[in-house]
Structures are given as C-alpha cells and as structure tokens.
Amino acid sequence: MRKTLATSSNSFAARAALTFAAFAAAASVSAPVHAQGSVTLYGIIDEGINYTSNVQTSPGHGHNLYSLSSGILSGSRWGLRGVEDLGGGLKTLFVLESGFDVNNGKMGQGSLLFGRQAYVGLSGASGTVTLGRQYDPVVDYIHPLMPSAMFSGSIGAHPGDLDNLNNTNRVNNAVKYRTANYAGFTAEAMYSFGGVPGSMAGNQIYSIGAGYARGPLTVGVGYLNARNPNASFFGTAVSATAATNNFGSSPVISGYASAQSEEIISAGATYGIGAATIGAIYSNTKYKHLSGVASVLNPAGLGGAAAFNSAELSAQYQLTPALSVGVAYNYTDGGAANDAKYQQGALSADYILSKRTDFYLIGVLQHASGIDSTGHAARASLNGLTPSSGNQQATVRFAIRHKF
Image (tube, rainbow, N blue to C red):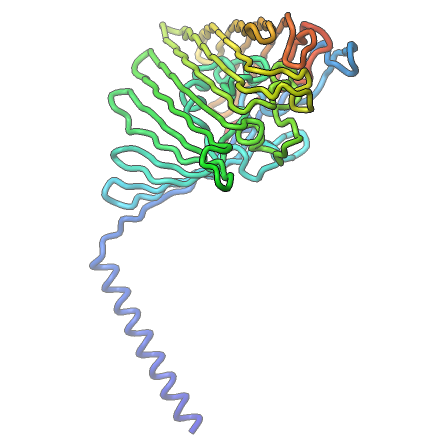
C-alpha cells in the first residue's frame, strides 16, 4: 500500500513539474519582458585637518583648536540608487543614503541609518513622484548654486545655516512632485504630513521651487513653510520633544526654537563666462510667533517674530584643468528684532588628482555685531563649528576627498 501511494505521489509530482516547466517556457516566449533595472552603490569620503580660532571653552574664554573633521566640502556618505524600467515610459526608482563620520565611524544626521535620504517613487513622461525622507525644493534648486556646495564647504555656509541652504535639515514623511524638463525649466512641489492626530496643519511642511538651467545660466527660486519647526524641521534628525532645543547650539538662531512657524524665501543664480563662474544668492528667513516666555527654547524671552536677510556674491575660476580657486562674501542682517549682523568671507583652492580624488584648501573668516538670538552680544559662529567666545572667528581646512 505504501509503495503504491509513493509511486502515485511521485508520478503526480513529475507530471506537475513537467506541466509547470512547459508553462514557464511558453510564458517566457510569449510574454514581453519589460522589467530591466539596475542598482548602484556610490559614496564620498571627505576627511581633513581643521584649524579654528577662538573656540569658546567657557563664557568669555576661547582657545585655538586643531582637529580632524569629516564631510566639510561634501558630506561623507554611502548610498544605494536603483531604477527599474516598467515599460511604456514608466520607471520606478529609489534612493537610500547614509551619512557618516570618518573619524569615529558614527552615522550622521542624528545617527539615523539613512539620514541623508530615503525614498521610493515613480517617474514618467510628465514628471516624478517620490515618497519618504527627502530634500525640500529650496535645497534642490538653491543649494547647488551656493558657494558652500561649490567650493567653500559647510563652514562657508550662511551663519548657523539659518536658511537651510546648506541642507542641514531634511524633511520626513514627504511627498514630492517634480516636473519633466521643458527646455531647461523644471518645478517642484512638496508636502510633509505632520502626523499630529486631529490636526492636518500640525507640524506640516510645504515647499515649492523652480529652476532654469541652459547654457551658461542657472537660476533657482524656492519657498518653504514649516509649522512648529523645532520638531517638524530641526527635529528630524533627533528625538524631538517639547523641552529639547533642536535648533542646536549656534547663537545665531538657537534662541528662536519656540517659533510656531518658519518661512524661507530664496533665489540664486550662476553664470559661466569662459573659465569663470559668478554667482549670487539671496534669502529671507522668518521665525514667527515666538513664545515671549523665557525657556530653554527661548532664553531671551523674545516675542513676536525675527527675520534675517542674507545676500552672497561669489566667483570661481578654473586656472588649469586640474586647479580651481573660489572667493565668496556673505552679509547677513538680523533686522529690527535683534540687530545682529554677520559678515563672512571665504577663499578656496581645489586640485584634482584623478577623476575620483582631489585635495582642497578652504579658509573662512566671520565677524559678528549687535545682539543675537540669545539676547547677548553677537558671537561669531561659523556653521557646524563650536561658536567663538567673541565677535570674530576664522578657520582653515586642508582635506582630501574621494568619490566612489
């Protein structure tokens, strides 16, 4: 009995296997294959030596500092980028990108696994839709035109990166649409769900941007609005709580963490003339509805609103195919709310060793005046570095950058 059953079972399995093989073979012949995809591993390692003057060690006291630092001209990162052709002009795509510190191996962006970007989407003839953790349209269109992106690095960004044009803050829970390219013109719109039960507007972020790039001219404009920015915008890389000042330690903006909303309007352009590229950037940043109550989020107890206007001019010149130099000047005015003013200059040189490796040298000097967001005399505060004990600070960096 057992032998008969086994023979019957084996016979059935053999017939099933033959039937499946025949079906698979027929399907492979008759059905067109559309799905063709690829996955790319990529990354950048940016590491160098910094000298920074007048680093505050205690109130009113500062010392010079020599240190190794990672990811100044380009954030050190690794990532996976994939695309699959679905046929009919439609593609699916994804990006997973992780920042890290070369000196200690720690993940960047608040130790998030994919803190730089993490999204999936669809692309077709009419544009691209992506969902996940993404750059906002202001960053997409203005950041590439910034001297900090081209040659001065994050230490050359506007003070405290107050307008996020150096891409300090990413946006979580975001849906973004980008149009197709029409003769050099593109546009974007993004909406980030706040995730507050019972409130569609709570912690939401929305942003729009547009750009034109053709020939020697590149132009970008953008607008961003963030509700409760301490949690929705600045808190996207940390565990945001009502009592935590996620604006960071820079006195340029740390006193505005109680703002109920933040608005950024920015425009920029670059123009190539032979071996030279000249550029201009403008931004207006407003922190609205400050609490008016002294707290860790508002150490000066400021009320109302605070606004910054920031303007920057830059020039870059390709001396040889391997060597380029750059210069930039930025002026940032805190307006009537605090009258803080920041003047900043940057110089740089970059030497290309190969297609994937280069050396660079950057120097930045900043001078501050007036009263800053904390209600005290403004201190110089180069972006990403420990603030100065006084109104002036300089830094010099020599580094190597390798792309893979």
